[in-house]
Length: 249
View 1 (cartoon, rainbow, N blue to C red):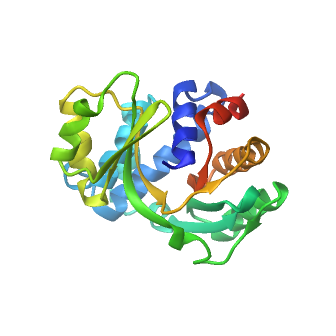
View 2 (view 1 turned 60 degrees about the vertical axis):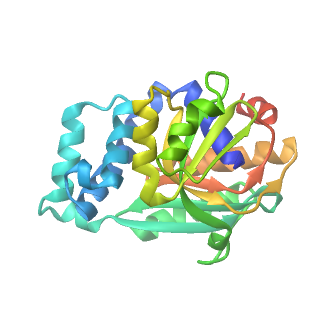
C-alpha cells in the first residue's frame, strides 16, 4: 500500500483547515474547468469531470461555483485554453520518488516554484522520465477498515476492481482507470462510505523510510501541495500509519 495514501487518509479525517479553503477551491475549480474543456460538460459521459465535481461537493463548494467552472471549460474563453497539465518528477528525502501533478497557465512560474520547494526541503527535481516509470495511473478508493469487512467490498470486485488491499486502518480498492467510475458507483449503491477516491499514480515499488525521514518527506509534500498550481503529489514511500500520525502532529 502506498504510504502517501495513508497520509491522504489521515489528512482527510482531519478535514480542510478553513484558512486554506479559498486556495483549495481554486484548485478544484481549475480541475473542473480542464475536465470540462477536455471531455465536455456532461459528467455522465466524462468520468474526469464527474470525479472533479464529486471532490468539489465533498469540499462543500457552492453549486454556482461548480457550474461557472464547467461553463468556463466548455465556453470559448481563452483562460481555459491556456491551462495545461504538467508532471514534475524528483527525489525526496531518503531517495523517495516524487511525482507532482500541476495545472498551470504559466509553466515557467510553476516550474520555478516546484524546484524551489524541492531544493528548500533537501530534495532534488529530476528530468522528465526519471521516476515516472515507477508509477502506474490507477483508480484508488480508500475505505475505513474499522467499519467494513472485505465481504462488504465484494461489490467492488464484481464491478471490475482489480485488487483490494489492507494496511493498518484502511482498505484500498484499486481499479484500472476505465473501471474507476463503475466501481465507485457500486460502492455508493451498496452504502459503503468512502474516505477518499481519486485517480492517482500508484507506486510499483516502495522505499521504506524511518520516522525522521518521514517527517522531512511530509514537510516536502505539504509545501508542494500548498502551491496554487499543484493538484496532486504522489510518492513511493512505505511507513507505518503510527509514524504518519506522529509526524502529522
